[in-house]
Length: 485
View 1 (cartoon, rainbow, N blue to C red):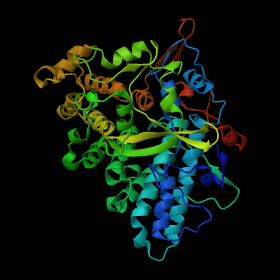
View 2: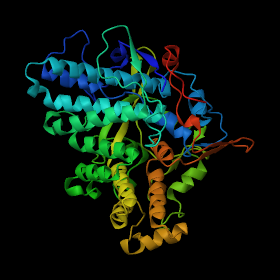
View 3: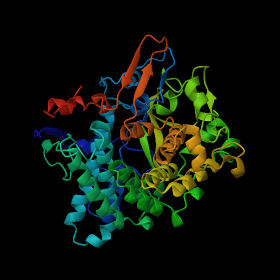
View 4: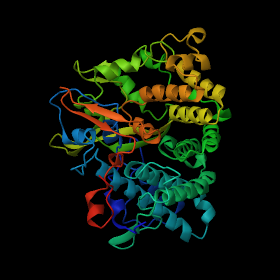
């Protein structure tokens, strides 16, 4: 393929805004020399992207309908129309690109310090975390900005720059290479870093770091994209003690149903919630805008969430609210507003985002087992999930079987029926969280967007190049090959 170069600022790490002490340790002063295990560990708090991918991925998916309202912001509108972003501020693809590479820069700086240290054993856990952080950020970038992994074409599909060295010049050159190459590097970092993870090293806020469970959860996502289903099952099993996901699932049809909206919004992203395997603070307005965005969850999607049209025929127990008749939502995010001017109401919004959750790992394992022909194991996971989601759950009435899912979808193809069941419940579970876009990519699901007045109907086909988000303007100006349009 053509060799293309991208320039990434040597000062990328400086673009990461300091976080809130309530959640994460502060980004260390960059003027301070990072030369001890404690300082390296502190540096790694900035190795997680502090940008939110949900606003644009959710708008691009079939989880966003046109409500016909006046809340027609460009940041929400352009991804719904699958247009190239015109903005660089928070909640945009460009902002995510910048912050992901800033996180990678922090991981690389930590790895350089570790490589030069005389007592490398003292840095072992931090090395594992740095490698996992580098792998995760690159995975998110290649998933969003490149073609979804296809073993038949990955060796020629353009990837994204995989950066493994700290930048020591103002402008550095990087090759874009291929999706296959990026996946090879992700897997290399993942397999090298995972055994080094030491949960005991996270004395403070383990939910904001790559614990062993979070690392295995990420591996289950990575291998699902790579279609290595045996590896998905292996890592999903290692995510939970004794391989049982049920104790880690959110208690939606019991405890959550007793909570008021504000309490539920805080609880969903609470660090003590066992379902949250990895959390990150992100500079974002998503918590306030998700309800009123013109392109989002409307009465049709709101009805789908708790409707009876699913393989169980039962009503789900999600707490669905509406702000106006056209604005439906599930309370999931709570904004922390940080003032930048104490004399005026000016500041930045910060949202906690679950990067990896127990429910996703359960669905990953169920899908992988289905692809492997382990249908009973897949249904066992689905039934565990449903036991925490169906209103007044009754196993005798609501337990799914092969016959039930085949009858519901009108097919004798067991594999197809179970996959469709998984995708249905997964779509509902992660509405307003952006993960539906990943399934749309992997399964080449067409997306149809219709304007409120019905005059515009657009289809994003299985091979539409707009599935690849366009790379940012800065990278384009530096000579990086554009994604096709």
